Image (cartoon, rainbow, N blue to C red):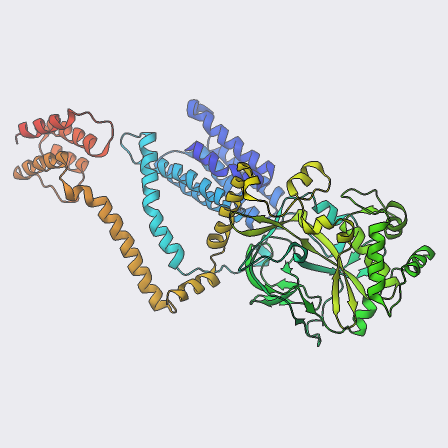
Length: 638
């Protein structure tokens, strides 16, 4: 039991404060030591003092008993304290049931398939603990086998209830929320090195499964926040209030891609759609900056059905937008003005200036690097005229700045570019290392048009994508082909892709099986009201129960148990002597009643009952036991 409790609470070492987990481990080790030295167990006063200490630690670390972290800590500490006051079987039951609750709390932190298998394993050990508590001759291996059999028999019924039983969405009370653990990702502020920091993170952001062909690598831009206002160092997202009803409508003229996007938990309520989304379901809205916003809790994993077209026209621009996207932090320096003139920067010919600027980046010895030298003062000018080495955010911000000096409305867009294809599952994985920044310029007759200066410096970043593993290992820029031939993939890579595919389907079909998905699935079966659902539940549960009952009772239907037949002969002899034997009486009950009425036969009754129980319910029997039972019953006289 102590081992199973230790396994149950082990994952919480990463979830609750170290001081509280250390307190629980101290109590667990104390209880373990007391198995060999019972005198070390504290008395009631000692347990009371430990309880006060536990309450004090809880208050100092959590300041509450409400919320996920505080509630979990409370259960863990209570479980540890209860271990020190085991006086009987009832206390063991309380401890095991409390341990089951602690096991369930693991899913408040992680819902992976590995965690589910781990919890199933340790719950099997806890169930074996209950079995040994109710066995006359406890045997660990036999209890574990019985526990495994019970769990396997319960899985079909659990599957039926999971699919058909109405799913209830718990209300969301913000006052019960815990502070969100730090999550990496894009934010409302863009600084020159912010995206470079993400480039070393393998954290998964979202996964995408396309209904048809994938868009080419050069079109895999996943739109996120837009940065328009700057102080010369950092760039911030402008307010979007009032932009939702922009009279200018998007016009799409290219191919449309349909796909399912599964967002991982994050800190912002952003959905990174393929640029530019054409259709999106309920719960999503597109703000005035053409970014998708969800009304779901961003800390939960969510799935969306989307359509996007990479060829679009956003139409005109308002006076407010023009003024906002021409904003400069101050008067540009003489060398910036000179560079703009040199590149033929004229508001009447923006396409020429943009082409010359991109050519300037290609020809003037600019470099793409994850770790440029610090540029604390005037970072854009320092980058353009001195260092000439930077990451995508350096190029995007410098590009937009020069366009604004040339009186061309422009802004920076953040998001992700590319992704890695999982050949096993056929979906695209986008990680924090794929974070990217590019530019948008407003052009007459075309609306907002995407320009990526990074493609001018490092075209392989766009065409081939990021090699996440090598980039993290080396700390330097590494690119690789997004799609590899099957023959070149090592067994390790294929194994990892297989596991990621299993995890993706687990998250999609099990974890994301919420009220909406259940309703859609049931409607596909023709279940559109609670009456039909009740019939389906009744029939399904009865069917599964019938199959299990037939499977469990089938051995007795095929042949009678010889030990049971002999014992029934024994009971018949007792009944002839006037000793009442009811149908529901167990062997021990029958024996105690018979010995009370016929003390002279007590020894024979005990021997027959003991050998029958061993043959019927225990595994440590010998081949001669059945013959001994038959002889004892045959010679039994009342």
